[in-house]
Image (tube, rainbow, N blue to C red; front, top):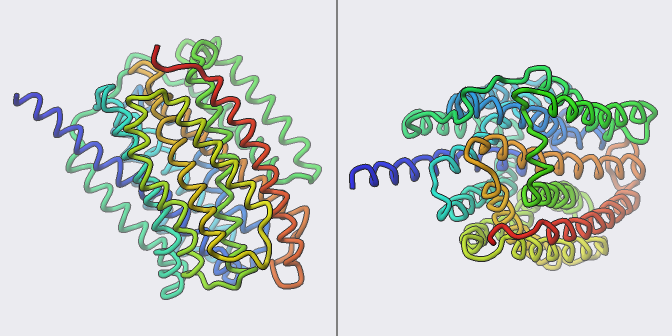
Length: 461
């Protein structure tokens, strides 16, 4: 009985620590979206640079996620988890002192580096201590914490910005980061390094990071000439990376995990597409509410809360349901609802009532919850224990590549329709045109994602 109680205590303490960090990063992401107009005034930034405030963070995170997951499997998930928190705190502190937009963007990248380290290890730590019968439940709670951060970020961030300025967001990150670090040191007992006999593939990690950097940065520069060099270089780099991994004795990403595991492959692709079709919604609607509808940051944040609140409410029940029902059916239904909500936003105009915007955000939130927890449970349930860190890093990479792709698409459409101008009354019609085109692209993307989700096969035979 004593051993069972100790195991249960470890499960609960790990869940608490990982949930706190799972809340922290999305809170910052969603609250920064509300701060965009204030940051535009502070740094005299154009529309394209505003898009890079989110992209710089996501780019740094995606470059590190897979290598960090493998490194954690070898050298210890707890060590990487704690190091990531410390780096995130440092990046938040230095961002407060940023004298210009370039310094600020650099610190957003540092934040992304730290976030990659605790994001890729949090899910692996949780999967390491939970039995398979409770995995969906635990993942549901972790996803709920993520969406709680998204839910409170716009409103709480809007209030902080309105009262104390945008730097108050980063002071709050210092407090949350310090609290997360103390909780981890106090409650996270033991260490997990199930692939401790393997060696870390440094050359493969560098090639992977360089390829991701070229691909994403090149995408954000479209349609500039430089992008036509960077995007192909990034694609060739990924091809070279996969060839390296086939020959590596201890690859950071075993190619057989994709080629020989259909559930893992198609679930990962579904996550990539779903996040690619949805992440920029908050960015677009935040600008729409504040510029087109003339809302102050606090009121706009209150409207934006609707989507993550629904995600928060239904993520844990969806995760628990995936312990009993086939995740493929739940996730595909959620993605279909997301496609419906995106279709409604294609018709958004200056006279659209706020209740309609909020109602559609609620629909997106419910669809997102129904997709995310079951899809994550399917991914973690399709791999062996020694691959938890790698699988966690992979799905997080799919998520962030999707998020970066989403922001890249939004930035490209802004660049094509608005250009390097500050958003103002003289170009509101062009801004709306860019938003409509972007949402239509997301609808098409999400429709493709439904097909991948349905074709993944069954997790339970």
